[in-house]
Amino acid sequence: MPARANPAVIDAEHARFLQGAVSIIVASRNASNQPELVRAHGCRVSRDRRQLRLFVDAAQAGELLADLHGNGLVAVVFTEPSSHRSLQVKGEGARIVRLRVDEPARVEAYRAAMVGELGRIGISEALTRALLFTGGEEVALQFAPVQAFVQTPGPDAGRPLGANA
Amino acid sequence: MKLGLDAIRECFDGTVPGVMATCAPDGTPNVAYLSQTEYVDEEHLALSFQFFNKTRRNILANPQAKLLLIHPQTAAMYRLTLRYLRTETEGPLFERMRAKLAGIASHTGMSGVFRLKGSDVYRVLAVEQVPGRPLPAPPPRRNLLAAVRAGSQRLAGAGDLAALLEAMFATLRGEFDIHHAMVLLLDEQGQKLFTLASCGYEHSGIGSEIPLGEGVIGVAAREGTPIRIAHMTGEYAYGRAVRDALARGELAGRLETEIPPPGLSESRSQLAVPVSAGRRLLGVLYVESPQDLRFGYDDEDALVALAAQLGLAIAAFREAVDAAGEPAIAEACTVSPGGPPVAVRHYAENDSVFFGEDY
Image 1: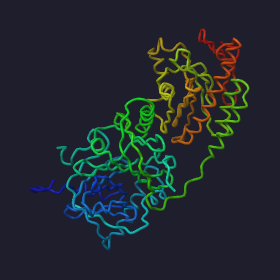
Image 2: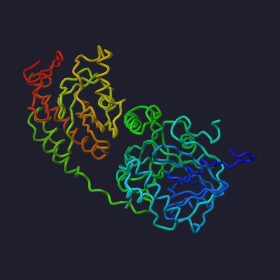
Image 3: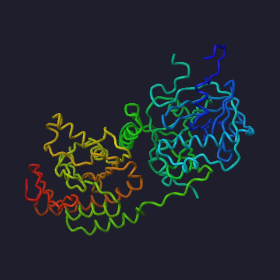
Image 4: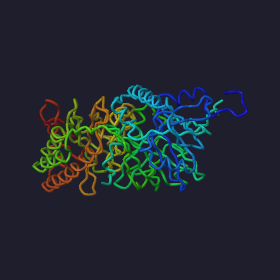
């Protein structure tokens, strides 16, 4: 934990986890508290770990982009399929932005990493690529993480990060 | 065309778990993986309630939810709009899910972590396919409607109980490629099931008994609902449980025979379907396989349809036999691989079982 008055919610080890071969599902809600969710295709953590960017196919996002325009609230679950290890991150101030020049390559690298990870639990490359297919325009959802929780199934699920000491 | 819930049931059996988004009353969204999704009917599904977690608190306060499902063979994604209705903590749906969850838990190394507290029933308000490029669906192993028709004709052609059971096993082998099966009947006291006939086992286990409520078979009978497990689990390994209990002497007084039940030692998929005549439970049709994920919702539907006919036919033959003053069960037959059929007589008066001419 950095010795700062107001440390980042995400530490360096978590940043590596979030940017690795993990399934990413992002959720929002509208003005009537009706939730929405979609699968994302990779995550980028800013250098100071105070901003996350998720890559999402706009055509797949359903009501999620409209929800984010409305209130900017997100919940994201990151799960490593082979170990069930899961983290949930809550965020605020989510904006929909274009991908940076180097980010399409990150999305590709993410797909390749997932082919390897899901391959370890017997899922074929063709199936993984179909699962992570982008048909429309890929957009980035950028937001500030405000809370993070352990969500690996079991008694610790829901424990805030940093509360284990 | 509107997507029916039964058209995407395979997503519920998949190895890729569903994910659900909910929202707290203060407007904070939440997203979490589910262990189990169960098809209830065209307008309802049930989700496993295992932990008092955020998802749980949210749906009790705000019943709106969205579920993301993935087809295990094509990777097609579906988004379901749900509304939470109620939680069931006993009865057929709960027992079906509890048995299945035990299988999932054992398969994923989560035994002892996953335990069903309740079945959360939701109304399905909308089913939407997420745009993408799914893989083509593999052709089905067999058109199961055609298999049911062929089986139904075979059963209808049987002239007595022995021929009926043989027709059932021949149908399972020939039309469904199912090679390990047994038919068990409920005893007159309604307390235990005894094996009437079996096929595909080294030891036929004819006459072996399973207490009502024990394992996949006993629970299917007690609850009057099919129990289907895609991954073998110790907890519901009826054969092992009964054998172990016999060894410990725990079933003294509950079982009168000590014939070990038949069963595959490497059973991976199991399906027990109640056999009834109208509303009267007669017994259970049980099938198993050494393969994981061998029986799906469609197999279950097919065997439920055939079991209905089997039950009515068993009842009709029994009535005919009773009217003629013969023993309650006569001339049942077992089929072991390569072996000749063995005629079995089970006398209800003293619970004796005859194999051919042997006691």
